Image (cartoon, rainbow, N blue to C red; front, top):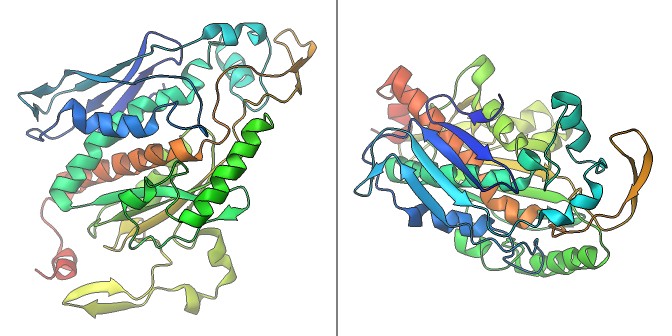
Amino acid sequence: MGNSFGHLFRITTWGESHGGAVGVVVDGCPPRLALSPDDIQVELDRRRPGQSRITTQRQEVDVCEILSGVFEGQTLGTSILILVHNTDAKSQHYAPFQHIYRPSHADYAYDAKYGIRNWQGGGRASARETIGRVAAGAIAKKLLRERYGTEVIAYVKQVQHLQAEVDPGTVTPEQVEANIARCPDAVCAEAMIERIDWARRQGDSLGGVVEAVARGVPAGWGMPVFDKLEADLAKGLMSLPASKGFEIGSGFAGITLTGSAHNDPFEMRDGQVHTRTNHSGGVQGGISIGEPLLMRVAFKPTATIAKEQETVTDDGEAATLAAKGRHDPCVLPRAVPMVEAMIALVLADHYLRQQGQCGVPSPAAEVRRGE
């Protein structure tokens, strides 16, 4: 329960932080999509721990293995199973507080729900679970790119009070990967790195915002009422570890505008329907309108910190905790590929749902593309 996501492009992640391996099963990927481990590995390398001084120093190479669903370099249309072995788990770091509830972690919540929990690294509540999402997201990104030229780019927009200036219409993956903060604003990135480094030395942590844009999403994707495109995006992104908020388009800032200022006027450009502004974030009525999808996800400060905190044991006794181990002082840089993955998974699912229900594009979509 709760381990699967999607309807037609459906994934199920499995494995625990300190178990033998983690991974994912991908169902519904169309056949004859060229796919190799290298397509997946490039995304896992962006997510892996130990990649810089401002991330956890757990050393995992995170080499993926495709065990099914691919033959002679192409997908078969059957289930794709991807596995990544855990090689650097150090469970002894967690032994001193196996009976202590870590503040703002899932320890107590899992005990309350299941009556049992995996105290070694948090088990399924660990961000290591996201390996499966990123691996599946790599397949979704390739499918979208090859079928529609769709591009999903995320980047660190804010760390604590530091906010970057980024143009989502022109930002490139190369700009995102140009520094260890994954912030395309080079000046702000240096300030972010310095601030995260400071928090690490203090034994503390920081939160912030990842912004993402999906360009090249055609009009017509999404469903009315309960399966609106932005609702599924919100569900996917809010399922990420440490996520605490979601916005699309103008988001909460839109409440400061009047309706006349917030509405996106339609116009024709080069024979295609466009909106003059994009306060809607590319979605109206729960359905994409062909404009870029722009969204933001807020991530809380990492819960595991070295500073001493008050808590209780699983027997209800008062206790203090100063966590040991290897943890991200700020999840934002490594969250970037996770955000991209979840957006791509939602879009791939809605692409297949659109094809399954509507088949050919609607007349409005024909006008939108100038056909």
